[in-house]
Image 1 (spheres, rainbow, N blue to C red):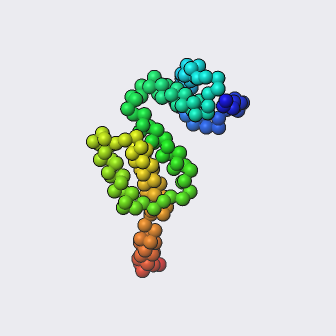
Image 2: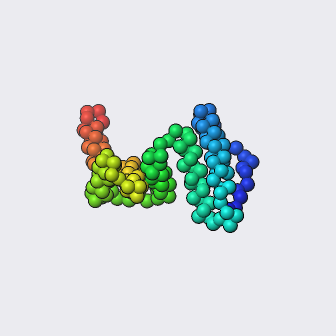
Image 3: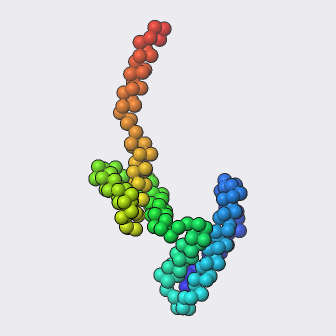
Amino acid sequence: MPTEKPPSQTPHPNKDLISDDQDFWSRQFLKHIELNLLDVITGLPPSASQDEYQAATLQAVVETLLDSGMALDDFPSLVAKAIAKIEGKQSSTNATQWTSAMNARRMDLIDRQIQETITVQEQIELARLTEAMRMVVDSEKSQPMEGMKALHAKLLSVRDEEPGN
């Protein structure tokens, strides 16, 4: 049986950072997910395992997303994006090197996605590769520091050569 999490007595510190529309949508989503979860878990046996509760919870999430207008075909890529974001947060401190092999694999997966032949596992892999690429591109390591230093030194020397300096 899953353990109960006590309700939070303090408001979330980022509550003021979301719009009224985001707040409304989130609250409606939570109400609907609760109703869908209750519908799903009533079919579970009293001795249900943790795996059965997790599957029921995921089913309730999917049903709630479908109720909100999502197409079922969009679910795998949505899950892949969520997994990639979670993995990105967990490994954000050590961005990997982006290799030509990783880039080639990503391009192959994009081709499969365009051709609509990509599998769920490949969608997850594509999302992971895309997130890894973004982490490397956005990291300070990817900046051409040596070139920037050389340009900076050149600009300083030009400035120093000007009359009056």
